[in-house]
Length: 171
Image (cartoon, rainbow, N blue to C red; front, side):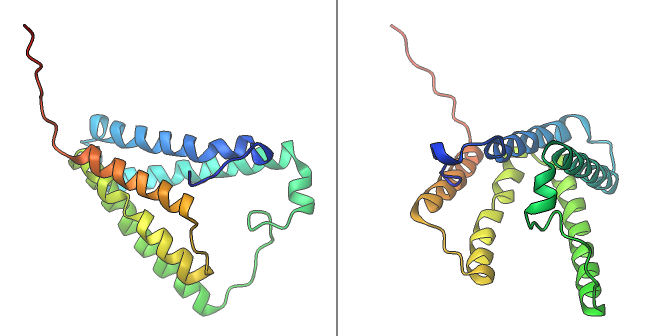
């Protein structure tokens, strides 16, 4: 609902959010099951190194498969480096500190708590994505996108509710 696909814009790129969500869910489950003895900082560093390598490989593949993307389409992925002011550099360093703290904290949370519980709070990004979208870009989500976001948030809340064993009586 949030992507709102139609026959004119169906492409492999449309499947990327679904693949990313599946990988994120698997990493949450695997972290708790197999990484309890790992340090949170080590896990955060490993994750970011893997993301960096994966992104680099994806950019090389995109450039190799479709060179016109890199040559004709203006894109933040393919633009050249820009000169940073001291203020820009300071903001980047501050964001790096915040992101490091967040990455280590999330790794620790998934390691020590159930993925369902952490996932519930992890979905808070939906609220912030809407707020930042409106504040920074003036982009107000349409009703279909809001419905999709509501369904995602509702699914997270429902998955975190306590389970009840209901036994059906047989005669």
